[in-house]
Image 1: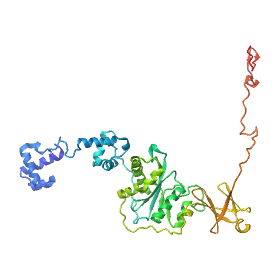
Image 2: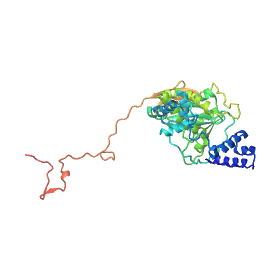
Image 3: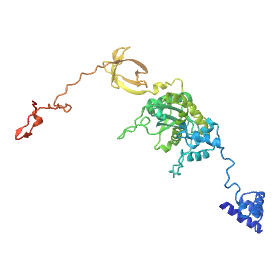
Image 4: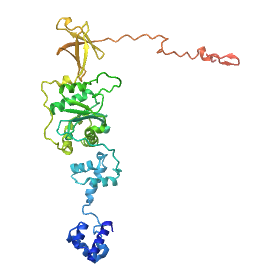
Amino acid sequence: MNGKELARKTLVEKVLDKRITQKEAASKAGVTERQMRRIIKRYQINGDSGLVSCKRGKPSNRKLKENVWLDVVDFISSKQSEGFGPTFMAEKLFELKGIRVSKETVRQIMIEAGKWKPKAKKVANLHLTRPRRKMRGELVQIDGSKHDWLEDRGPKASLLLFVDDATSEILAGEFEPEESFFAYGSLCKRYFREQGLPKALYSDRFSVFRDNHKGPKVDEPVTQFQRALSVLGIDLICANSPQAKGRVERANQTLQDRLVKEMRLRGINTYEEANAYLPVFIQDYNKRFAVTPDSHLDFHRELDLDEDLDFLFSVHSFRIISRALQIQFENKTYQVIPKHHASYYQKQEVLITLNSSGQASAWLDGYELELREIEKHPRQAAVVSTKSEDAKPIAPAYNHPWRAYGKKLNGRPILTTLIIE
């Protein structure tokens, strides 16, 4: 008998001794009066064994049928299901095989099959939860996750994600080879055109978002990304820790598990195919995990159609036109093709923009200048002196007297050249 059954025995004996009523005993046992009368009757007929559950030692009515259990084990043991967690495994069993099994049952079967190891519950560090923003688009958390997304079918890449703070909804995502200004700029342009302009973006302290050079600074340097956002009226907030932008961090963790396995099941082997599938996955992800915000208002502002996003998300720099109407930029020399007198251009400061394809443009007073790249011929190789530190000494010949220096045989110097008769 277990503890619950022993407690019932005490209540039944009190009822039989007229110390309490059946109603009081039923209330303490958490059953109805009718059930309590059944328990008392079984006790009177069978004694202590009448209080023991009749289901003990018998298979459960909910036990899986043998053929269904074998189908589940085969799916769990297949190569395409390798690395699946119990929750994701239960979802795919229903989606692909039509077998509805609880995640706990799947977990137990996976443990028996050696496909899952029970994990001891860790004591989590305390991080106070920051309240969500009230409206969608009020704060958007952004981050990049470098991961082996295609497993052994392709190289590693970075998945850039934009996650709404109010709803945990993925607003935009894209696979890129590396995190860079142009990669984030490309995703921003698509996001702003589709969704509108948010109030603020929340990022880490990656060099694209913030200048991290140490040392005395008169003014806080502005990165290219900050400059572009300031023109659009979007605030950029840099977090001090990963926990501060936990919503996008948790989304990355979920996608590193689910998205990798979904792409494996669909046979996606390139990042072009992955980017084409990503909107479908994001739509399903938002249905599963997005929450309802406190306010149904959307904070996104409509993008002004006159705003040139390609111009904003180019690298901006300033140069001075020389007297010969030339501009030096990125180790290249550009000749300005004048449309006015040369004095109009000489010593003028111009804005140089560099787009993602590496094309440079120059702007003076809001007008684009016509440029022609001047081809530079390589210099002749410099002659290195033998006394230079870069000069390599030449090894002496095998019969050079230096090789036999100080060596004698029977008191006579050794000949360096052997004469064989």
